Image 1 (cartoon, rainbow, N blue to C red):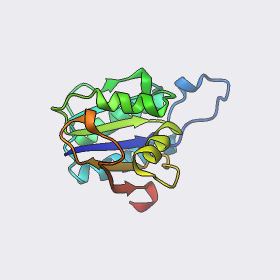
Image 2: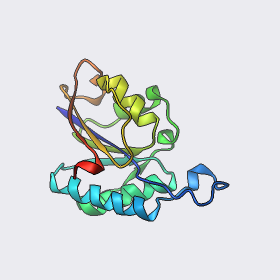
Image 3: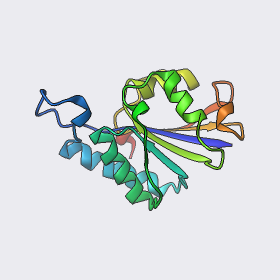
Image 4: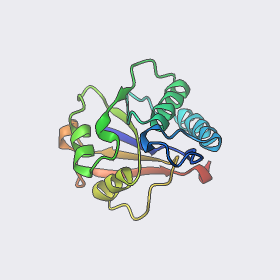
Length: 161
């Protein structure tokens, strides 16, 4: 079985609308939300084998916070494809993951991650900022993942913790 966790970065700092989107940071509220969610997620003992994040400022910070809370000592893989990705690019990124990875955490953006949840699960709502989806795939290789073997296990929203 393969487990995919996806999370959308939390609230961003919109004080400088002329800034390039890629450089937009988490707001103070977003930092607090991310720490809260990372602490909660860590308490679930997810045993993450690999963290892959968009290299945008807000998702890199989110990945760092999650890594620290999960006591994740490996390298965080920054993948440019996750910034403004199309669904097929996200799926391709996931299927290229080594099969030695059983538990994968992807940290990215909307609307891409919502589109991924809709495609794999028929998810009926927008994945909220700061939320985490846990998806189990009934297969032994990432290349075999698709909607026929995907199952939503948890949808954890900030308001739920």
